[in-house]
Length: 275
Image (cartoon, rainbow, N blue to C red; front, side, top):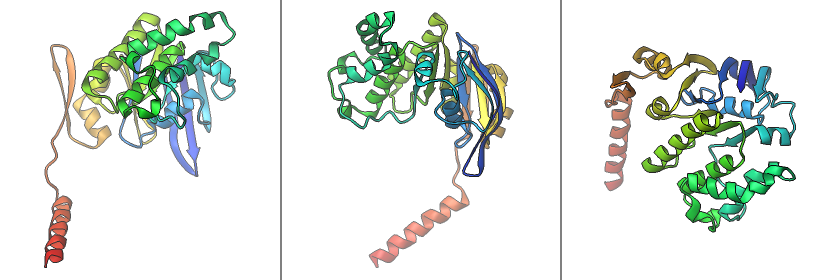
């Protein structure tokens, strides 16, 4: 459903992605992981059609995002970005209804109200329907944004850090919902996650980016080894498997010389100010 072949992206004379290739299949959740600056959000923007690639090929539900119309893309893929802020005052229900605009004038339009209600209920946001979205917390806005994505009813769903602003209850609810969506509706889901344990629990397929290239690609068990993750993230990481569940344990940071020097500087400045 999502095919990426040898994609490179150059912006401002800098290469952000270099020969990236991977496939995200229907019925699976593909986790896009990697260190900060690895190119995860850039890759998602290319696949969604929001950013032009410099070279390579991309196919999303049979469409090339670079040459497809906005309407074609809206019916093929739904996207939730990291920034879920809304610049104008809208009721929550109206924001979710925006996800239905691409089906206006088709038989699916008859299902609008039912689908909007179901999408709000699925994200535990039905009680927010009459609220002005500007009054919501960051986590509430994230759930409303996901409701809009669900209401769009597309065969491909792309999510960029959907759980970043959520409490533990809603993190589990949202990721469980995403997995159910993939399995039950045969949707191809690609989700950017920094939480490696969450990715291990809810993803079927992992693509790990590092320095703009694919550092690892495979099942969770194939990608999640202590050696792989320690090298990719530049930090000692232990991977354990208990009763078939894979979990990640980063080494706890010890005080470094540079940290001690900084604290000493602050202490000296405070002492000087008091004197």
